[in-house]
Image (tube, rainbow, N blue to C red; front, side):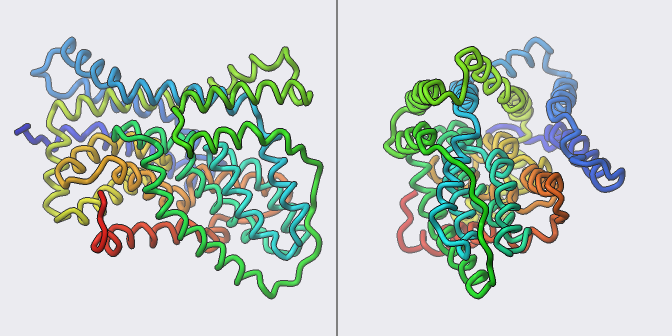
Length: 438
């Protein structure tokens, strides 16, 4: 049995103090706009890695490098990094005009009184196709503000619908970094994790849709604003979506998306041939921070594991959470706590992965269910924290268009994360009691 050493968890504490502490200072004390995102997360993790290297002087530095190399060189980590880069290239190729086409097409054929419902549905589709909640919010929030202005619905309500839909796709998309991180960290197939997640997410999304419908049922509305769109440009997203659902290898799916996207963007004139390679490079570069975080976290976690930190944490969790259901809740709260601390659901999953895997083995929880819990709970917390990138980007986009709205105006309208939490708890404590397939 591995030794237990709670002091080995110090690097995580250092990271939390640097990232969360300075973020709160910048955002709420110094009132710096997007204060949390002025803290370089890579530097924070490098500092934490330095602390981990200083610990345990009994182990030679060369041996520590070997431990870190084994952690970073893990098959799942390498696969995760390659998928990150390929997904970045795909998004760089197809750009944002494709998702805009989806949004404006739906708004053009559905009555204005259903605008909020359309914003939620469009955001669900765009986020599951693009694999990014922040990208979806950046893209659709200006449309939501225009819809609110033209239809008479409240700005906070429309933004809440967009953020709710964005978290739906962030949790389910095959090219979402959270899905990639959770699946590769637990060693399960994306299609298996998708099936687990879909059974939780679908009821939550349907209930959300019903509540939005009831909230807007008797509202007095005007006409929604619609702009030009090109449906041909959504084909790469559709191919990626259905290829993923059919269980085709993720690399093959992304290559199909990149190939079809390149052809369509060139033929339609949306991208010049001279710009295409540059867009691919920009897309891959956009994954640099996520990739570096995955590498650094893998190195830190390898050292913490070697020192006995995870053994101590697992023992502590086992004292609190008993049984298989308790273990599932423990995994969910673990990744939730990581997300509150880091304000980044991908980072939270990467940090929680090694501990969650050990807990899954201890409590006999299947890899796909563990990956589903990690992704679901991280999205629940990330979707509602007032200092998360999703919230800050939405507020900034609305402000740039001349509309003042606060996080606390939007939070009551974030229906999907609340419904997703309820659905997740039901699937842990109620449904498995009758039919637990994990």
